[in-house]
Length: 352
Image (cartoon, rainbow, N blue to C red; front, side, top):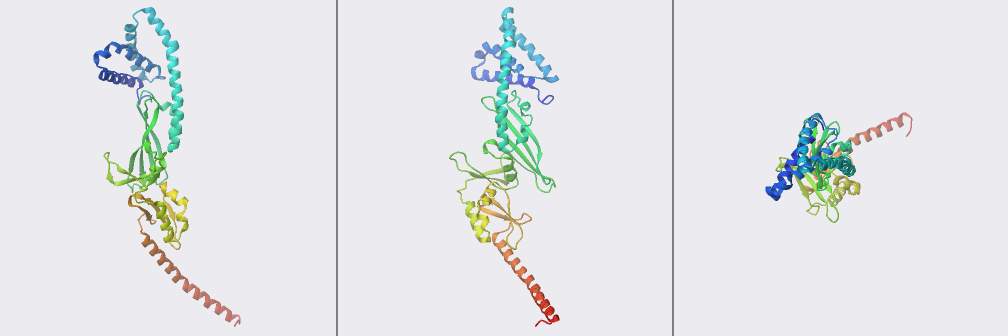
């Protein structure tokens, strides 16, 4: 935090923002009478919570301290009352405020830890308590790139303070890069309210759809990124597709299972895998491996070959029939050769 973010400078800026807010709401004259008290309390309480300040922060704190000392003399002109106030502040006010802050921090860390684990961002929990700075309204946390040798996923979390002063996950930005540089870099900012996990983000950025179950009585929706269109931020358009708008994945899989004589395609495992945004590999009898993906935008189950190119069901069936015929043709000479070889052997042994 030191050298990157000056908490003392932010404390002063926060006061200026609050002062302007008070003037805008209540008017300058109404605020002026109590402004000194507001300023003193705000800055003093803020300084109590800045522990282990950096060199730059110490410089700003010295200036703020001079301002609060001056305000204290104005608020408590009687030396005896001022001394009693200082004792109260040191003995009671500061320890209570620090204890209250530590209690809120501990509860906030536990809640965030659960949330981040649920979203698949467990790595962000490392030293989370030190990352939460309550002088800020918003905090960014960058996670180290993750993924396999062919792709790299970079995640940036945004935490925002709620009305109670606690930090909550507001959104995260995901950037998917191809290590070879052949595929284009893809990125999107996902609001936390969408409940998109890290795994969901990878599948969406790779072009596959993900089905998110609704909460309570709400029905779920398919999410799918459209990379052929741009939103206001210049990124892909995220489509939310109602499952009742013509795309019945279970029915599509049942049809596909019948056409390919592969009953397992109508099973629950394949259904759940496609809903999760996964690519399901199947090897038709006598055929090469093909891959299935849910494509609710086009109301179909997309079939792709080994190279990732789309292939129609009719073409797949045609290829299957052709490969079956080629296999039968290749087996005929083998059968003939085996029969003739056996006959030749029997004759040499005198077997009629």
